[in-house]
Image (tube, rainbow, N blue to C red):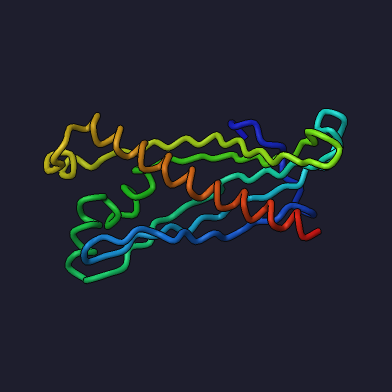
Length: 167
């Protein structure tokens, strides 16, 4: 991939369907369904004998639920009401690598590296009614994405650690 992922192997790699918890707004909720490719890279000398897991975003779609008129307005403002515009509106790519290293004889350190890129095209109507500039909206959006990723990755790493302890 353009992010540097290892080429998939259709016999051993898995595709995961991931549903986010989403965000609730007055009158509607916004969730995301993603297809993510997963790959186990077996250990080699550079990894200290531990495996590495790669997770690559394949496809992502927004799911909006709520009051009919509110959902209709949301879709109009974001361009989600037009399939062609919907496909051209957002381009996202993501590669996550989870690695382990031994820092001492009885300690394992889990590390997660994420390369996440997103390009959003704002519909002209939405740009006209935003209460902030496009640049400010981009900055606020980036900050919100970083907070969400940090929260989600922290939860995943804690779960991974718990599973490791149980083994």
